[in-house]
Length: 341
Image (tube, rainbow, N blue to C red):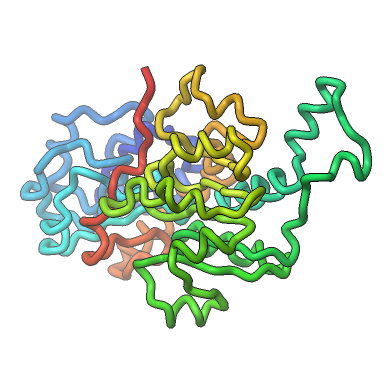
């Protein structure tokens, strides 16, 4: 008899994350319950849960119902984070693996972050705006304030899946890379060819600063006004994980004042209000949370889910999704920005 899997990815669409081939693989492998774009009604979910071996979901919307999940082996979250409002202690006690498809976004976000860094340093978007206004400067005169990524000191805040994908992309540029990550030991970071630094040292000595920290209950506005004031003049701050970790108002003020450059894909409120002052900052590159939504990359999420379903069905541990760890799972914060009206 096939394993029964509740597939309820809404807000994501089935064809957004599952290629036709992976949908066929999944249906050949397990008995798919629901498998639609619309969110599964709660009564249908509760009816299916007692016989389900795995739940594929975007967040945990179902309440405190794990006592009804007598056969459940895994919860797979395809939102890009670990689910909130889930009783992780109950999952650990019941040997239910909690898995996140966050690594499926890592290559996309790493590539985009590298592009933001080069764009900011070489003023590519800014130069385009000048051309369209008929205000361009040619050759040397158009490069007075630009600089190279090559051979620069780079700082990375948070060495998780995003940073681990960015790291090899930076190596050809001959940069020196420092990292601040309180969840990792200095010995581990050193053996990755990285220089562990305090957050203060990293902010003060890096020409490029990549913010890739996982939002936690401990790091809200961790990058404070005082830390932002340590940034070198004309350095580049690349915000790639979540605005949760930075004093965005202070950063906006400083970028408007020309203190440093900002390249960001995330904002405290999304959609960004039309009158937000960061929209007026010539020293900012703004992206509407697009770093991790490329169709080519999104289907990798589905591939990872089906690969790990195959492992679970065979009685083997999943290898592709990220597993929630007891030491960290209770420390995660919401990874979603507030929604604007």
